[in-house]
Length: 82
Image (tube, rainbow, N blue to C red):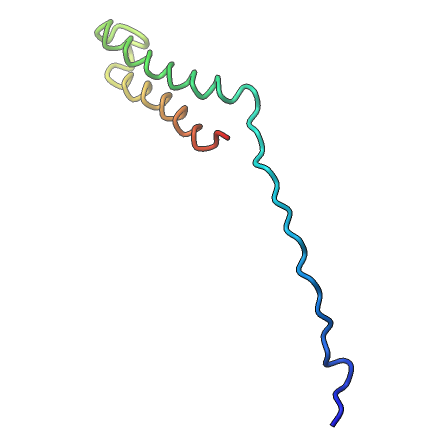
């Protein structure tokens, strides 16, 4: 028994996948990333050297958390660095 033409599927080549190069980060990205890491470190060092009088006396021991928070934001930025 002959087959109808509608049963036959034309073989189409698979669409070519274009490989795009990863996007570059803006020029400001790297200085901000390293700046935040250094700022966090300096915040903690300032807290310890001044025995809690600086950078923000009302924060008390929370100054350590603030310093680590700033530094962690910088470290998290390294995951997006290209």
